[in-house]
Length: 144
Image 1 (cartoon, rainbow, N blue to C red):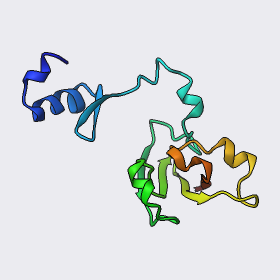
Image 2 (image 1 turned 90 degrees about the vertical axis):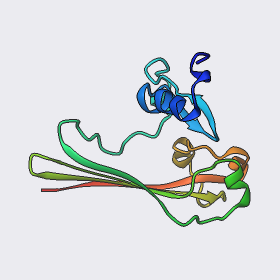
Image 3 (image 1 turned 30 degrees about the vertical axis):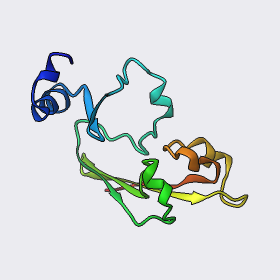
Image 4 (image 1 turned 90 degrees about the horizontal axis):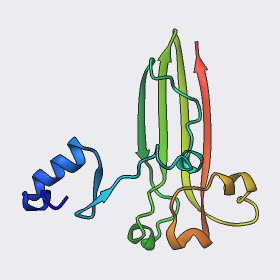
């Protein structure tokens, strides 16, 4: 990293972020990426896929941000993600596989915050965690 610091910033970014893929650029600073193979615990706390799409099939994956249920000014300062829809479509052996997940930051109350939702409430919330949680609706289906 010391040798690279003498290069122009755009070359540093190209080498570290795009070529070596060791760092991400966040707020104008290089942040080292976590080696997920070294820390296998991450596989247990990261949101798993609803339906495992096999590498040999053709597919589509996209994440869309939707209008936030709660517009909280502090949300942007804490870098808490916007509400989102995660869509995965796969095709193999004449079968289409659809996976859809909808994730919204909601205000906690005794009617909507269940133990299952607590277990899957893993997205970052910063200091909003005391009063908010990530609600989700996940479903998958196949079309033959």
